[in-house]
Image (cartoon, rainbow, N blue to C red; front, side, top):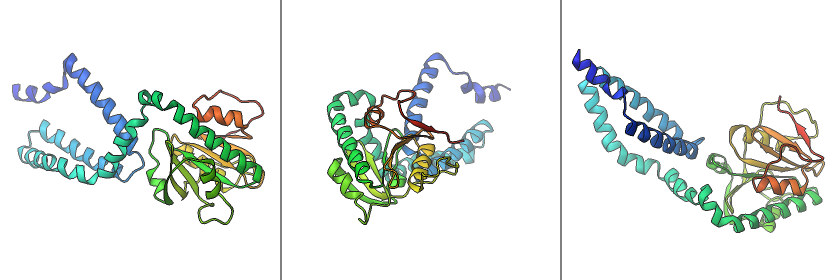
Length: 266
């Protein structure tokens, strides 16, 4: 009986253990946000399954399975550094985008906003269709890989050039990470929700689809109506004015803007 009690003793942690659990849980949550919708996520699920098997082996005192899994975990950590190298590199790079460090990049952020607003304004005036996705906490690497790598600083001239009619990349989406245009001509998932506004086409469905699966902010310029629309959190605002667009890009999201048509997704 005492042997069984010892096996379950770890289920009653002390207050120091609880603090450690909270810290580890927060770190794991941040890592999962970085890895969400990447190929590495499938491997994370596999590791989680092995971890569950190890817990049961420990509870039931299956010494052979415990020894095998402990050996696997010991050498698997080295293999994980190689397998997850792209994700780890992206995670380290994204540390510079944390909320604490963003304070020091506020001026640079305003420049990026100005360039995007200028580009969207020009595209709207010219009646040129466009779709621009801005990465937030969730990575968009999976979608960026479907397009052509650009790796250029955000500028109104570059965005206008990409969406020039009949150019090789004008049909797909531009993906922006920080102040860098990561990819152009990217393919985004289409929403399955019926759109009530019949004037909205594939670009709007793609923008809404991405906003349903990630926390990205997606800007659409309609080729047919020249209207500016913004999709975020599974909802789309149509007829967005430039001032409202600037507020959304800067992270200030009023509940309802003047002259906006709020398009429901259900």
